[in-house]
Length: 328
Image 1 (tube, rainbow, N blue to C red):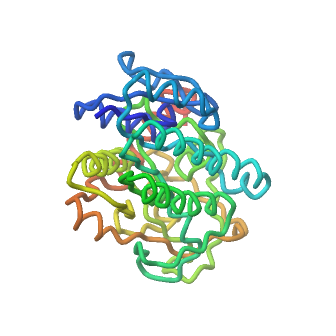
Image 2 (cartoon, one colour):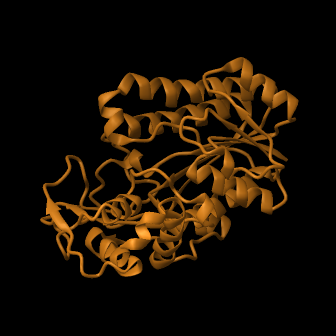
Image 3 (tube, one colour):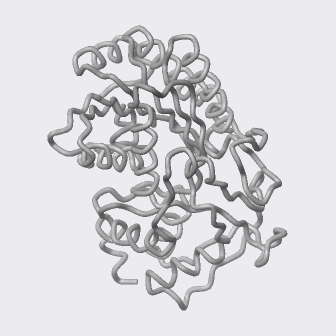
């Protein structure tokens, strides 16, 4: 198999590239350079700069590299931005996916893994989110992921493509400091950033119906997520397998925002800092924890790394890119 990994120079994408190349797969990275870091990609892995909206470029890279499977991670993913720029998100996420699938179908590629999101569920009012939980996304970003799943499955049925959709939650950690998340959008780098600037971490609301009043989330180490992508890719590589697989990726364990921030403060040596509670953000559900029974049953996969490993590895990456944080 030769896998085309779109968005492969991104934070998650680079970890998927690492997992697949270490497993012996041939990999080609396709990235538009808007958020990816080329230095994350090993020198012996081909990297092509291009947009998923560019059909000619996609046709060319698939043909030139003999691509036989695709892992599609490239997407715009900021929920708030998607509310402000829905047309942009639909064009990039859904239009880009459609163009990519056209190229895949025309080239006779028969394996397609779509990196989706638990944002498809919206505000689930259940203890554990299963793959059968109704999908009611609350943002244009979540809508593009759900519509993307529909499109992937429809194209799979029409063109004989075996497909998989992976719905995952909150990602943290790093396999190596060099592969760490350099964006300041998710809870771990957000807290790191505030600590580095001498500011207290923020908690968005502490009046939720949870034990400590803060939201409960399911956090997964990015290496576990990459391993899950590899496991699903292996399933798709099996010629006896066809049809679609849709699975949640998580740990199946909830950690409150306050608990997670306390852990970050402990790992970074900032235990004397008290988080500041500010008003809730619109649309934040009280609890989102995934049931991972299906992927365990189908593939024998489960996460192996805990929250402290996520934070510790992420902190080492933050220090590499922000040496001034050591003064804290």
